[in-house]
Length: 89
Image (cartoon, rainbow, N blue to C red; front, top):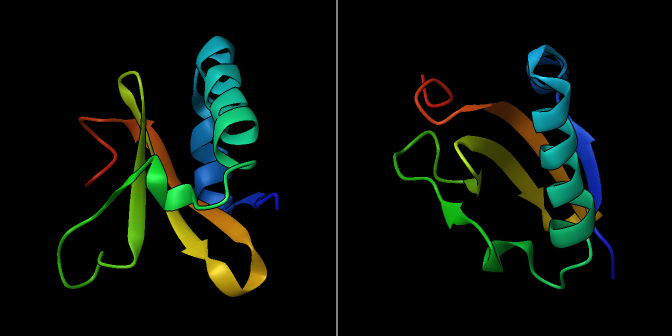
Protein backbone atom coordinates (compact mmCIF):
# COMPACT_ATOMS: atom_id res chain seq x y z
CA UNK A 1 0.00 0.00 0.00
CA UNK A 2 1.61 3.25 -1.13
CA UNK A 3 0.42 6.66 -0.09
CA UNK A 4 -0.01 9.39 -2.66
CA UNK A 5 1.96 12.59 -1.90
CA UNK A 6 0.36 15.87 -2.95
CA UNK A 7 1.25 19.50 -2.28
CA UNK A 8 -1.04 22.37 -1.38
CA UNK A 9 -0.30 25.36 -3.68
CA UNK A 10 1.21 27.29 -0.75
CA UNK A 11 3.48 24.38 0.17
CA UNK A 12 4.53 23.97 -3.48
CA UNK A 13 5.61 27.63 -3.61
CA UNK A 14 7.51 27.23 -0.32
CA UNK A 15 9.29 24.15 -1.69
CA UNK A 16 10.18 25.95 -4.93
CA UNK A 17 11.82 28.78 -2.96
CA UNK A 18 14.19 26.43 -1.14
CA UNK A 19 17.71 25.59 -2.21
CA UNK A 20 17.47 22.80 -4.84
CA UNK A 21 19.59 20.42 -2.76
CA UNK A 22 17.32 20.83 0.27
CA UNK A 23 14.17 20.49 -1.85
CA UNK A 24 15.54 17.30 -3.38
CA UNK A 25 16.27 15.91 0.11
CA UNK A 26 12.71 16.68 1.27
CA UNK A 27 11.17 15.07 -1.82
CA UNK A 28 13.38 12.02 -1.42
CA UNK A 29 12.20 11.65 2.20
CA UNK A 30 8.57 11.86 1.12
CA UNK A 31 8.79 9.37 -1.72
CA UNK A 32 11.27 6.82 -0.34
CA UNK A 33 10.60 6.81 3.39
CA UNK A 34 7.05 8.08 3.92
CA UNK A 35 4.95 7.00 0.92
CA UNK A 36 5.72 3.23 1.15
CA UNK A 37 4.77 2.99 4.84
CA UNK A 38 1.65 1.18 5.97
CA UNK A 39 0.98 3.95 8.54
CA UNK A 40 2.65 7.34 7.88
CA UNK A 41 1.92 8.37 11.47
CA UNK A 42 4.69 6.05 12.65
CA UNK A 43 7.38 8.54 11.51
CA UNK A 44 5.79 11.86 12.41
CA UNK A 45 4.34 13.65 15.39
CA UNK A 46 0.86 15.07 15.79
CA UNK A 47 0.62 18.83 16.19
CA UNK A 48 -1.06 20.19 19.30
CA UNK A 49 -3.73 22.85 19.60
CA UNK A 50 -7.38 23.12 18.74
CA UNK A 51 -6.91 24.17 15.11
CA UNK A 52 -3.85 22.00 14.36
CA UNK A 53 -4.96 18.74 15.93
CA UNK A 54 -5.48 16.92 12.60
CA UNK A 55 -2.06 17.88 11.18
CA UNK A 56 1.22 15.95 11.44
CA UNK A 57 4.81 17.16 11.28
CA UNK A 58 7.81 15.41 9.81
CA UNK A 59 11.37 16.41 10.64
CA UNK A 60 14.03 16.36 7.94
CA UNK A 61 17.14 18.05 9.35
CA UNK A 62 16.28 21.65 10.19
CA UNK A 63 13.20 21.56 7.95
CA UNK A 64 9.65 20.56 8.73
CA UNK A 65 6.90 19.19 6.53
CA UNK A 66 3.40 19.84 7.87
CA UNK A 67 0.90 17.33 6.47
CA UNK A 68 -2.75 16.40 6.51
CA UNK A 69 -3.08 12.61 6.37
CA UNK A 70 -6.28 11.56 4.60
CA UNK A 71 -6.84 7.87 5.34
CA UNK A 72 -9.90 7.42 3.14
CA UNK A 73 -8.04 8.51 0.01
CA UNK A 74 -4.58 7.17 0.98
CA UNK A 75 -3.26 10.69 0.46
CA UNK A 76 -0.74 12.78 2.34
CA UNK A 77 -1.35 16.45 1.61
CA UNK A 78 1.66 18.63 2.41
CA UNK A 79 0.31 21.99 3.57
CA UNK A 80 3.53 23.75 4.72
CA UNK A 81 7.25 23.36 4.09
CA UNK A 82 9.93 25.39 5.82
CA UNK A 83 12.67 25.87 8.33
CA UNK A 84 11.72 24.85 11.84
CA UNK A 85 11.96 28.46 13.08
CA UNK A 86 9.44 29.78 10.56
CA UNK A 87 7.08 26.97 9.56
CA UNK A 88 4.76 27.19 12.60
CA UNK A 89 3.95 30.89 12.17
